[in-house]
Image 1 (spheres, rainbow, N blue to C red):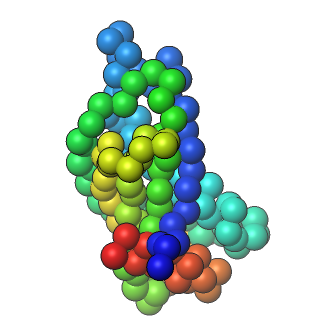
Image 2: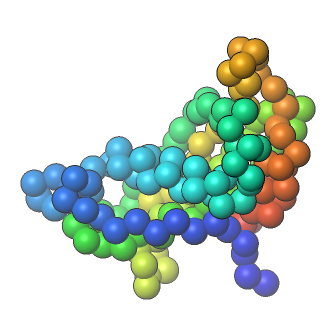
Length: 140
């Protein structure tokens, strides 16, 4: 059975690389955050995304193979686990060079949902729970 994960594709551009043409390690986090936001925008109505904010609690990234200028990188996003009542979710990221199967990097990001209007942590919105179920255990 095919795994269901969200895919964001990024082409490595000059701003992403060192003078040797190798992507900066921090860019992987940038790409992961962009993939996360695109996943939300592509799967939730705008009015559902706007009131709440997903704030980062923890990030871990493991790098395996360098990425070079003009490489096409697929950022695959899945949901590891989540707790609706506490508003916590773990997103899993896999970075794959387009057309290859070997991982470039992998990691996770723990997020929690925060309502900026009231200044408090809140439970996950129902619309996000639907997204979480869609991509849950994608890499299991």
